[in-house]
Amino acid sequence: MTDAIDSDITAFGRDDARPPCQLYLITPPALEIPAFVETFRRALDGGPVAALQLRLKDVPDDVVLRAAEALLPVCQASDVALIVNDRADLAKQAGADGVHLGQTDGSVREARRLLGEGAQIGVTCHASRDLAMRAGEEGADYVAFGAFYPTDTKTPPSFAQPDILTWWVALSEIPCVAIGGITPANAAPLVAAGADFLAVSAGVWAHAAGPAAAVAAFNALFVTQPAGE
Image (cartoon, rainbow, N blue to C red; front, top):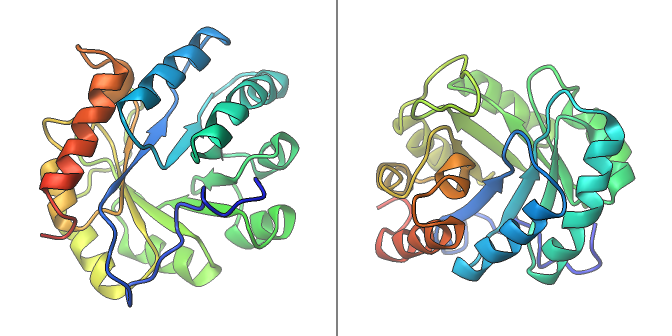
């Protein structure tokens, strides 16, 4: 974790005025360092980003750690939380801000014991209200619902509808993340339904006008489309 709390993407409660929806980036499934570091740096020219999830599947641990080492200074300089996918142990080794857990990646309690109270721990809940409730009870800092749209990044086990976001924000102060095939063109219904964060990969990295333009388009949407309205 960084010394400052500025990169905490979950530091608010429903008793306060809800902040606008924010952008949560996910790395491409394969990347080259340092080229991607520069791509990420340029993407940040488009506007604020709350978090970057380092998601590299089926690669050696040292590849993840090298990528985290290269990305962490860029994240810290821009108050972006660096979240490691799946592996709390690698998040600890990398000095990342937290971990994102799938349903087979261990419990929130185990990750909390390893990473500490200040870590940001998110949980994939697919389209399941029950999984989200369990994650909240275990102490998750955010829950992620999706996929909302088809995606080439991964094959989703299920698809979610925007009303699950509306249900969640009425029920819980724990932030929710919408994920799956999200682009600037299709994001508005998710923001209107109450998403606190939009998790985006190809919608930024493969955007026709470039990553910075995509980040700018998302941030423009967050201004014109207040969350939950």
